Length: 263
Image 1: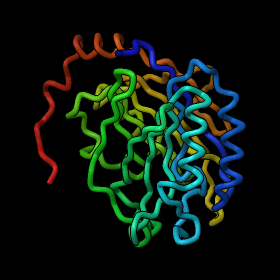
Image 2: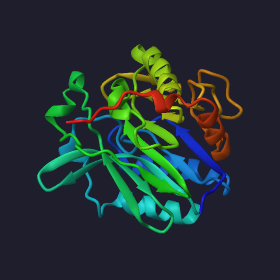
Image 3: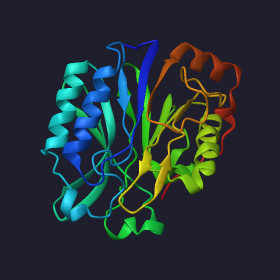
Image 4: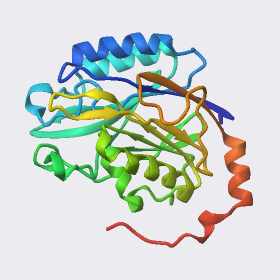
């Protein structure tokens, strides 16, 4: 069944450094504020720990407390909950996006472009597969932070409806975040959702949010807040399926895109 209006919420929050218990408490309180009409709640990158390379100490398994918590929250709110966390699988660590559905089923994407400037590639294993989530008739492509800088990886060859980036994008380069999020929406003729964090992390890096939700023309479509958003906040938007389809029919730019294969 295709849902004409998909209601989403993006939680832009500070994160307690390497403290999953405290962060689950923070997000539990914020999630309880969100209306029951919401279909998907998006959380930032590494939302239980902050962007840490200390995977040995903070990593969880796919049977760990955060996955159980996500299942409980999704069931209580009757919606999907999604964000990335540090996962250990075998002897490898992953920066893993989890899309948890209200029935307890989930889908996974492992971050492909690891942030070499922070030596993320020395701690985590890169993901090799892309993911398209089908949820309530919508096709959603999840990506993580540094993936935003690489347009080929996001190129809309799957006819997806929404692109989502969960991130820990620092203040000194926030101009790139703003520009690239908008560009991804325009070039892919899709909604583009960016969820960033705020506050200081344990390494002294500052994050100033600028979470945003753009439509296929690159226009801001979230409610209430003015741009840029630099405080703790929950952003809401109602994505409209027929509007997207009408726009793509009228402006058939995707039909003229170059064809390529990733190798």
